[in-house]
Length: 101
Image (spheres, rainbow, N blue to C red):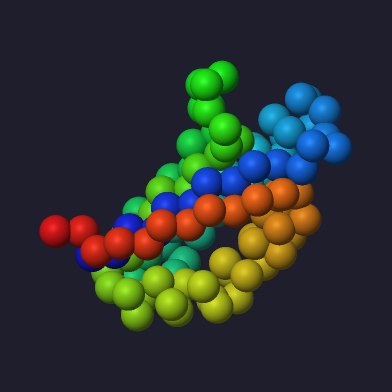
């Protein structure tokens, strides 16, 4: 199995209320991919970081294999969420992919 973890920070131009709505949209969009993409085992988005955090939200996802992760990255359903709900609103993205076990 492969883990795919991403931390994002949102653009500073948004108000606290706007950021909360953006985070909800990202969570709903990405978690909504469950069951749609072959090889995607689990997908969760955490939007409730503590004030000590320096990221606004985190994607924690699990795939059957590295190949399944590669296929996810170009899958039309994922690309639609990334282009519509994530990329327009995020300032930074940090990713860690690793093999479990």
